[in-house]
Image (cartoon, rainbow, N blue to C red; front, side, top):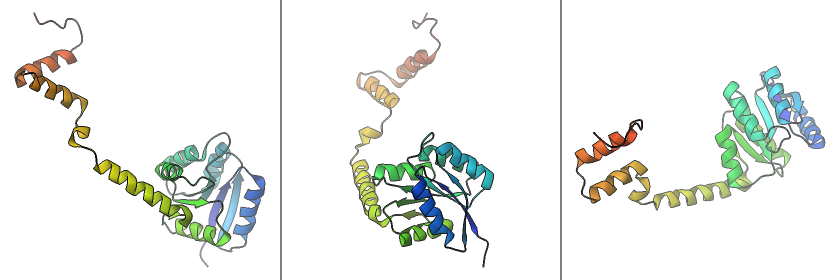
Length: 193
């Protein structure tokens, strides 16, 4: 048997936290080394125990799960984080992954799904609950289509628009360059002498 994987549970609801601990203790390859009931405590527990996995509720008192993820990933990038949450919207999912989540599991999941999520994340794979994966993918594809419908004009910067406007008004390149050079100088006087 390999070494036991150390887990920290960060969940503000005591009954749910105790249930998770009991469920995980049934496995000989997993060991819950600490528990946290708020975001600040979660960071402290990770610093003290250097776990392999942090099971993290997104809605935590004192410091949100998203903030906890950002902090943990900046200090301990090797710690895997599995978000456990009631939030099913793709906005929450994307925000969690941008903050450093390695997996996203809905609290409605059964024991088997949670174990698959934990094993996947510990193996270095990304996990998203099947119930929300379709919604996330659909949202991603819709956003991708929306971005593709952007026109070339949408990609032009404000400065480029200003240059084009001056060109359309008949100014020469040299005059435009001088105009922007004058505009970017500290303002002693904007009138050339």
